[in-house]
Amino acid sequence: MDIDPARPSALPTALPAGSSACVEIDLAAIRANTAELKRRAGAAEVMAVVKADGYGHGAVASARAALAGGASWLGVAQLEEALALRAAGVDAPLLTWLYVPGADFTAALRAGIDLTVSSVWALEAVCRAVGESGTVARVHLKVDTGLSRNGAAGPDWTDLVRAAAAAEADESVDVVGVWSHFAYADEPQHPTVRRQAERFADALRDLDRAGLRPALRHLANSAATLTNPAVHYDLVRPGLAVYGLSPVPQLGGPTAYGLREAMRVLTSLALVKRVPAGTGVSYGHQYTTEQETVLGLVPMGYADGIPRSGTNVGPLQVGDQRATVSGRVCMDQLVVDLGPSYAGAAGDPVVVLGREAQGEPTAQDWASATGTINYEIVTRMGARLPRILLGEGG
Image (tube, rainbow, N blue to C red):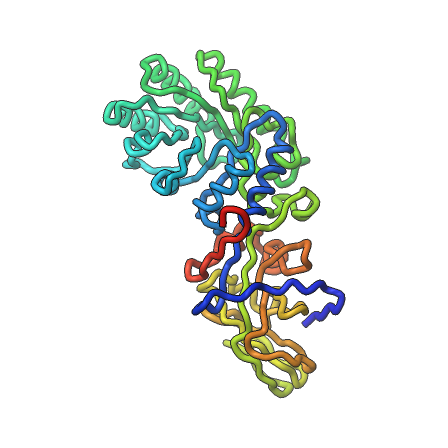
């Protein structure tokens, strides 16, 4: 356990009735983060990416807060996510990009959703949906510039451009966008960043030769939005940064980029008890007390999104002191060694995840401790944790 008496006290608000833990979402932070990203984007528009239920923050509430902060577009991965936003009354320009054969493109067109096309089969399926819906499809072509994930490259790109030009000539589709995605944007000086930018420029020339001149060229994710103005083009697509997390933690945390974390994960101690030295703690006794001490029981576990790899390393704040998970993280609970002088009781507040500026354990702290990335930490917070919306619009 590491006690820092100088650490500012930033205790949670009361938990919702009947809940042992909750996730606070500060919508004002999402709005302010988006405004900062818009400022950094200059003349480019901002597409706030709200996939994966808004990175665990709630897609609909996050979308509305981001739009209020200056985003003019929204982006999601799966078609079902896009349709859910429309069903909730979110009517802003919306792009989706990940689906398999059999996807309901007809429903997407009727809902006014822009579709990414990264293969000839997908373009053909979209054209069939145009006939069924009677609506011209707005499509964004996806070029693979080096991530080797979604998108067309080489001869596949050549075939896709040719087919898209023919479909636009037939007035089946309107090619309004072209985009790609970086493999190493979180390392701005990595040589692949320049190579991908050059390949994207080549792809733009391919489109021009084919008579396709999309109004929206977009390449920059959160990291490139913050660190690489040369690739902002017409639109940037920040995701992680919208929620106040740094996509380049090795260069600076949220405060270095004018961002504020929107998520805090809060609970309270369910039990406090004194145990003797040599006491084994939790499954497999991966932790054994070195002295007589006080243990606190935290009613959260891997079913709630706490990484099991947080065993013996996960950071917590109990009251106004920092501590570390002691022993194995269980499905519903974990234990923390609070030290022999701890004088608290059950009900004492615990911040599992909070804000850098308040000295609380952050998503990046958890990521560094468990060998993952901050994206995973926030998106894995479980559905049984109620979301408490704060800030304007909450």
